[in-house]
Image (tube, rainbow, N blue to C red):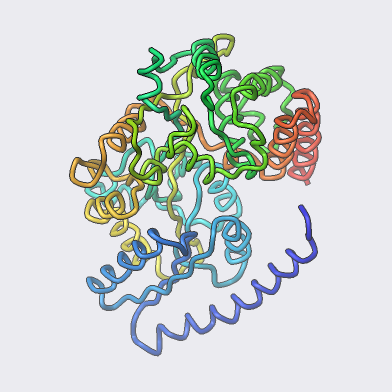
Length: 428
């Protein structure tokens, strides 16, 4: 939370600039006789940048009466900017949104358009979406978003090393610790981890919480109005994370996720916890890659097999003057043709059924897609499931815990304070 004043000033400046730009976009409708849609996403870099540019170009070609003005900023900047933009009188017609709590904040603010009627009206389109990926955009039985990609988090491992040592993919926590112990004794970096950016910690924390704490307790605590985080399972979950520290590479807090991924890809680590969408980023490896879901925790209470992961997609502004055209664009974006293009050119998995196949995916990618489709239920990304202020206290504390500077109990005391503050504010 450093440089708060500078950030606030920047956001206010951005808001003023957006107000001026929005006026120009509105006038372009009358100037050209075309409908102009504004489209905002978080991928200004390749390969996603070109993908969305090509989707827009093809849509405009098929819809000559519609122009789409695109803007994109990087991940962290997007989180701040979209909140500013949706607070103006002329927000983007179509905007990217993570699912779960991140999406729900737009619903609570009456910023997101209810898309339920479009889903029902065009069942030929909506039935082709992977249905489990729609749920995270659903609030009170109403659908507010369209999932474009799906993803999950899994342990990836070097099959050559495992075969050499006679190891098998673990199915429970004790087996995982035994595998890690053998790897360490044989002088391998057992589990590569880069925790410089705290979101990587969130995937461990969120999964362990989901494995060890009852769903009704998680639901209450992840709700900003009722969360207390006093269940003893939260401390136990952090203690489980501590058990992995001896098997991580040294100085995890000084290493970012990209470097850790490179170490695994280069064969310098036996295991790596990563998103399935990263398989393409592993590049060609000199070893065979295996994968397995986060194992069952024996002293956990529930949720032994859920897969951590969430879809990413788009919402439509409740203030848009062109809801029909905006929805036409999202349906085009989630057509089978564009879904196959996404898999082939970007390496991410489309939320449209039957878009990953042997012509555009590796065997590992097909296995990953199958794991997502076979998951009985998806556990949301931790950072998107709870209020950002609580997540910040949680992950900052966990990062210190990894260095040995805080205990799990101390971390949870900070989380409880943050939750109390958020809870009090929500009652105003």
